[in-house]
Length: 429
Image (cartoon, rainbow, N blue to C red; front, side, top):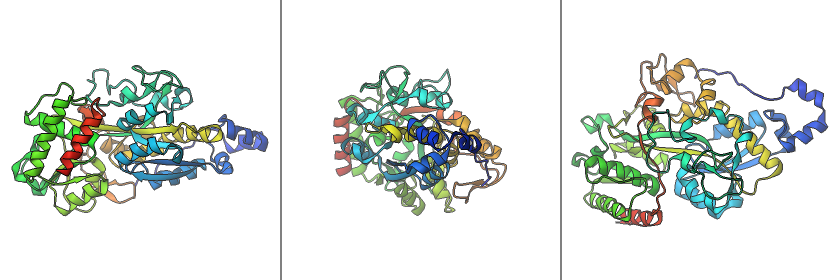
């Protein structure tokens, strides 16, 4: 992997020595000084973070400890378990690393506190997708729970979401992607161009979809529309009739033997594809890369109908205060300062602060992962292993090409409880 400069911001060691120990003690609890690890190391600050496995990574915890002196205790879980824990065990965590559709379920319960954007050092570096819903000024806002629709509240004590950006952010965005179908090109035997292809009888018993209701239902909606079975008024907010039609279709397909499996975890999707048990399935970009790293052909297939997207961020537990709250802001600012963003970009995700991440990536890495250019040299995974050979081009092309073709976001609908009940009927059928 290309070495990148380890950049730190904030007070220098020389100026710290001039201030004296008393000043350091004051600053540690007040948040006046930022970016110097010795302060937090001396305070023995620990932040308990939980969330999905895509971003609760040991490498991030290790780097946070090295840079800030803050200990991160990370717990990885699946999306449904994360949503439940956020609401039912609010005292068990300090940082909620959750997806935006989960925030729609969780934030109104009062277990999280908003963040003051004036304390977010890189707020102006956050991609506009999370501020106003548009990647570019000409972008069309996708259906579903777009992050900006649940990204702000009107006031510090508000429980309802604001329609426009305010001073108070529900979560700081960190990670997102545009998802599509993963395929085994050596086994599917033909070009895959549409979401409808997953229902081809040729793939009977060799297809799989994601078993997380708020995500899987959107995959199903993309499939249904692609097949011409239905045209949703808003597939991110289906009526009961639309939900019934979608689930009834899935139940029939399942009973006909179309699906080999319904996966919930990253590892499950990798194992299904690597073993050849499944040749086409809804998938996450790094899972495709994980299959390829085993020397097995796997492709993240762009489709004519576009992508299903998702985004996640860091939220603050309502109970945080004092030095713990100061440390949490310090951690979040560090998270957006570049190193983590580059680390996530190298896994096939996207950083919410692309400008800072670019400073921690080589020109070739940025060209491959973000600009959609052929790799000039071998592309390395975060663990230092060769992920792609020179000349490779990322599936789906550039950042703008991928995120500019988002058709929908993972969603929590008005009829969410009804949808989840019907989804569970499908899984149990």
